[in-house]
Amino acid sequence: EEEGNAPLVPTFCLDLKALPAAEQFLLARYTLHEQVYFHKTTRCVEAMIAKLLRKVAGYAQKGVRKASEVGLEKSHPLFQFFLKGGDTLENYLALDDVVVTAAIERMTKANDPEVAQLAGRLRSRELYKTLDISAFGADRGKQAAAARKIDRNFKDQIDAETVLKDEGATLSIYSQIGGDDEKAHKKLRILDGKKNPVEITGLSKIITALGEKRAFTRYYFANDSDRAAARSGEAV
Image 1 (cartoon, rainbow, N blue to C red):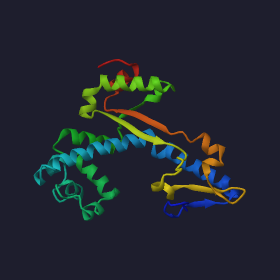
Image 2 (spheres, helix red, strand yellow; image 1 turned 180 degrees about the vertical axis):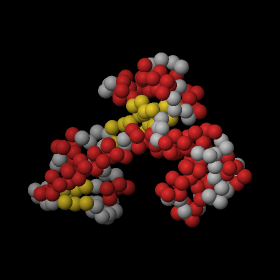
Image 3 (cartoon, helix red, strand yellow; image 1 turned 90 degrees about the horizontal axis):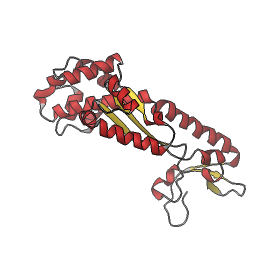
């Protein structure tokens, strides 16, 4: 619970003897995010699907007659969701993994060749090629310089989405909440030797040492030659 004039909220508070278990829990969650949710292949597939859905949304905003351009019937739940005024709770709940996966198969026969090609690549797992700026070394200054050069050299491809830029994702084992009332419910507190609740960062050297956020910047290239040129620092 929060103290003083702050609101009372439910939060985690563990006994001191549970500290090792809490550390292992945070380590396991961190590893899961690093190796699964933030894995380059996972993020690449997500970026490609997002690109495909943007194409569907673009046609849907032009009306139901454009459904064939993306290989879907006008009554298909995915197309209905992207129609003007179609983003209702009912239409959203009609979407699930099965519906979207089946839609990707249908989109391989879209009239729009870009939609058909992208859907086909997803179905056949011919994914875009990833370039993580960590490939340019651990120095953040060099990484930032490399990203700026890629942004400059591949501006047209990024605008056309034949190169997809993935930035803004951050990963940390635990972010100290401190006095942030809005996030108070996310605090993980440990009772110290005097039975006072202390945020885990105040007792765990492991969590404190791994507390710095890691930022990810990646590029996904539709063409292998573009990736090779970006990796070598050459302009196209």
